[in-house]
Length: 442
Image (cartoon, rainbow, N blue to C red; front, side, top):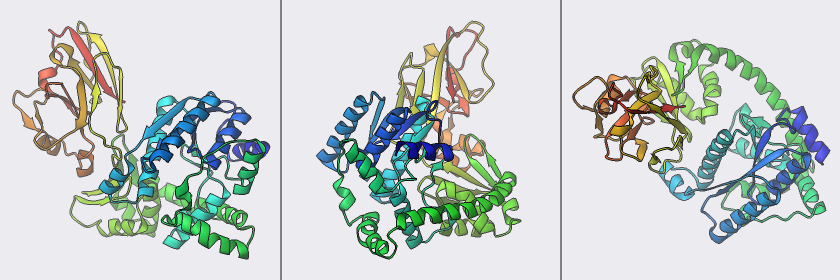
């Protein structure tokens, strides 16, 4: 089986086994335990990531302890996160399963980027593929849903997609590996479990090779999707503009596209927008500015002659602090880097992504937080104060980008920087400044 997995990785160009460090997502279940062991035996550099969703009490605690010991056994770096999944699901109005998916993939990517890892490996296999395709078809889907789970999507790779569940079980038994069972996998409350235990056994009576058949179908559908993808890419090259803070689509160019709703849906699919919502967006092309649409992961606003898309902050747990001497702060996907400089001869950067602050006027720790109604500061160059809500209007910040504006505040509550927009005049660097703190948004 090792040779089979190696060949699959090489054929689909998932990553370089010899050179690329991989973040392996391990729940403690059979599939992920096999994935970790296989990649380790193939010689890959592996790190382990485990999610505790706070849903299964002591069983979940035991899972985390099991995976922690497993990572130590393989001498692999270990990362764990403890989520308040139910609270997040209630706040967002989504299912617990969807909440867990959104939280874990956002966190996986944060860990991967922070640690400089090449890819995120998950343990999906052919049975998962069949379940996903049929579930998508049941709910209604397009080409993307019909090709199911891709072997590689962005930074996420699935090295076991060429194998069936029986292959994984045989490998586990043959190598004497231990794993933990998740009782929720048998609960009929979840649609996938109902499909797995009630529907698919009937389909396998009709076609015993169902998993392999669905995998072959997914491959053919994937080819058809590639043809469509190239047409969409050509259109997007003209209509789409990516910026650090948002993604923009020209409404005028979209209106001149054949099958506008279909093409726009393919463009919006990576942002999580459904077909129904996409049709509503197209219908709003002629509406007043400010009309807003949400997907589980992103927000779209019709703003004058363009669509503006920004990520939703899915794990907003409060405020984040930067203590004196700390160089890096990663919060809600925003990374700040703080460097100290002597005041004499310091050249103030012209970029709005960097704030030059007088250290002796600051009180630590500094706090990075979301702006709030009632916030005010003294924009650089002004003597009086200005409410931040009015400042954002003056700066013509689109509605959904306002939600992402963060402020860096001194410990006495004074805002010293509206991140990426303006420094507060009270903290500016002058000729008398002895020490400078340069804070850069990366």
